[in-house]
Length: 451
Image 1 (cartoon, rainbow, N blue to C red):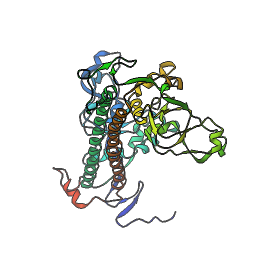
Image 2: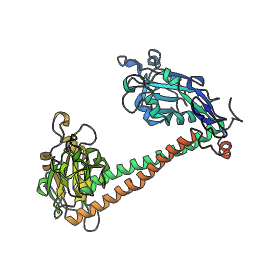
Image 3: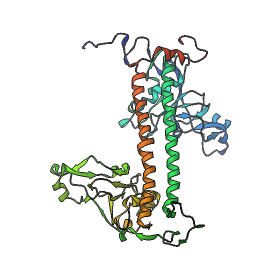
Image 4: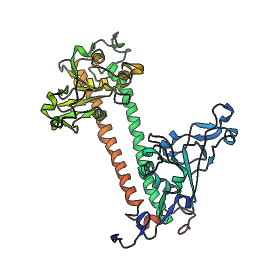
């Protein structure tokens, strides 16, 4: 084996190269582990008591301060459910979804179900907040450790017990946990602002897209303005209401055969359904050739068309987007090409974007699973204010979207990237925490290093 160049102040361990003053231990060496249980639902006397009971979905809260489930003392006694002390680390054991491998930490005593492992650490060896950050950073690793075909069998306590954890000196653990927790709090605050802004936007869209703005810039009200009945309900008397087929052309696209490599890799942008989630589409990665366009149902769609997801049981069906470049689309996307003398494309985008649930409910087939189609799209009624008012409404909603997408969400991406970089540096010892930070963040009551 080739000699490994080990930097001064570092050492080689079974978990890799780490600082000399750090240790490496398996979870079983510094913690107790257990899983929980679910009281029988055929016994109502087991449920509705005072004991918090956590299910796997609660892991997504990450820092668990409250859960809605409650069981009784009898339910606890008659099941495998156990009381888990606060400041334990909780790991999702089962499931093909995102929950398996998810780490969380409980700030209250609670019971857990059988799909959650609880790691109860010896706080003289490892700080719970540090252990949480360590395991939270290893989500994909935990999923890859799962048993069964392609990891679908889930994690188990034996696997959890055998996981190696890097353990810095206690003061450094505290500093690392403090730094990463500060970023987590900033992320949570930003996510809350985004969620609240999106909620306010939805409420505002409902008002402005049904009442509009008068010549004085005020939102109309039936108390102060004249309204009339229409196929979509009451609208201002100045407005018209038309079906999409009355003011736009509609089409769908296609996918060139993947058996013909000469159809792919050209200069024509080709959009797949997943690109709808960009909402404002100024670039796509797919490319087809002129012959690929000619030999398939793919079509060039002019910029500022409104694009609607037609198929799929996932979130894409009913999603509205607008393209800022000419491009081709696949067969699962409908393009609405507007008569700009009648309707502002940006106004139409915002109108249809606000009607996501309605579009999904219009889908054909059992429970709407059959998807949308061009005929359904053509028959959708759209309220049409005078064109100058449409443009004013679109401008207001576009500004709100800009603040969400390019300000709050960019800042959130920055914070998430910062967290990832800090975890890679701090949790591996690659970048040491400055000595002054270790001393300042040492918890009260702990002197020197914990043994």
